[in-house]
Amino acid sequence: MILERFLMRGGLAAGLILSVASALNFCAVDACSEAHKYTLLGIAMPFLGIGFFIIAGILYELSIANTFVKPLFLLLMFCASGAEVAFLLIQKFRIQKWCPLCLGVAATVYFVTLVTSFEGVKNMIARVNLRGIMIMPLMRKIVTIVLVFTAGFFLAYRGMEKGDAEESVPKIFLGKQDSSVEVFIMTDWFCPACQKAEQEIERTVPALEKRAKVFFVDIAIHPETLNYTPYNLSFLTYEKSKYMELRKALLGLTKKTKEPTPDDVKGAITPLNVVYKPLSFLEATRGIKFYEAVSREFKVSATPTVVVRDTKTGKVARLVGIKEINETNMIKAVDQITQ
Image 1: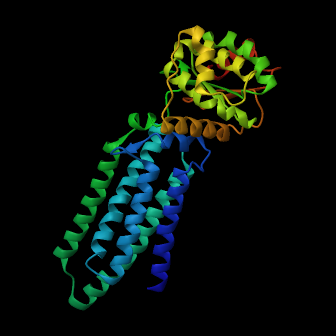
Image 2: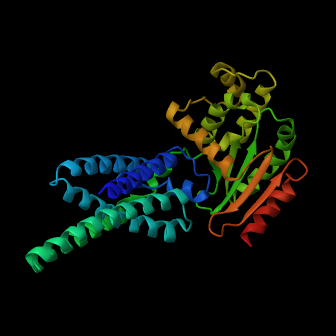
Image 3: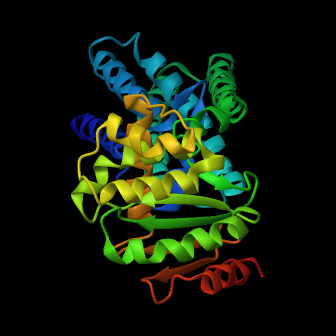
């Protein structure tokens, strides 16, 4: 009994810790970012996991003192076990990559279900030995477990959606929306080498937009870059058609101030007939987290860096520094990963 409680509490605690780590984006693997784009009934998967393990933990503690709560806890775990089958199938066939944290959560669900089922089976065998074989009550329990497991599977498989979750990050890219090719142009607003590379980048972007999604990612090598990131995110969200001109205006502003105010930005973009639309705090935070996730995923340690990736094939090409980042090499990188 003591060992069982230790294992159960340890498994539930591990599942909660893994869910919190997922919510905090501790996983830098591309599959984790993709998994975070999915929701179940409108709830992001990491937060669904946190809620589940908290509820499961409370039910388990109540079941120790109240035997009537034990069946409810068992049904919850079998429902979750069915749901995890659906989540694993989605990773395998939709995302086509494995998220380590998601696999860890699934493992804890099955571990806890196995431990609590073992105790239930042991008690059932003891009752059978005392009273003889009772087929109908046993069959009812088996059918109930199968139905709950199946319900969990179909609820998860049919309820999982990607569209709403994708809106958790603004569509901060230019170019071809349905392309599997992604170009990440990673720069720092105060990096001298980045500013030298801007001319080549500006020259190449029109060709890239016809073939790929083009992301302009702020990498804060200089902390002052973060002062420009909310404006950059706003222009990428609302002013895609004029983004390159607005980008040039922001670069000009970096020569004048490291801490631009909205009035400074409005003054810089007035000649372009654009009205600055600030993002909400939540939208700006999501954009910044996306930049941080990209930086971790590609292990960016220097700017400028350009990474080209085909999400279908998994092929990746990387260019670093002004000697490598030019129009010829960027086009060649796209050609290379799409062949």
